[in-house]
Length: 84
Image (cartoon, rainbow, N blue to C red; front, side, top):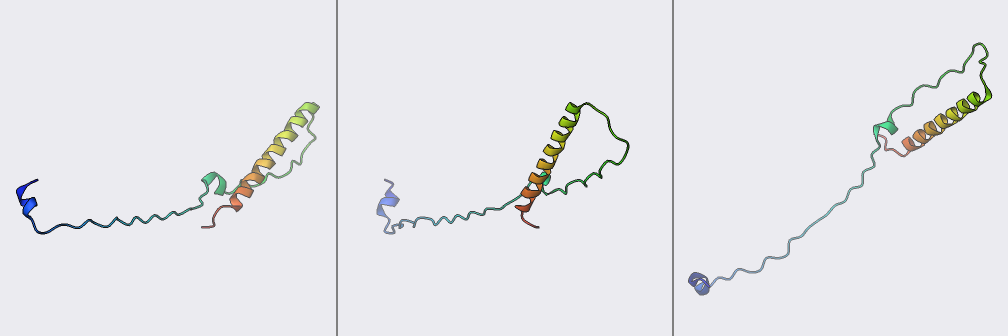
């Protein structure tokens, strides 16, 4: 031990444990893809009859059902987004 330390009359006390405060904030955010407005609906077709084979119409119907499902999902997800 150093001589100065051994003969010193002042003793430093032990510092108290530091207080650590933690704060957790949960913030709901939504990506722009969800909050962006949906495109306007397309007007129904009014024109001459379209002739095609039945598998094409089946494919088209499936495509339109999928598009509606995705639009409904986006609208439902947007309901859960915070209003800002």
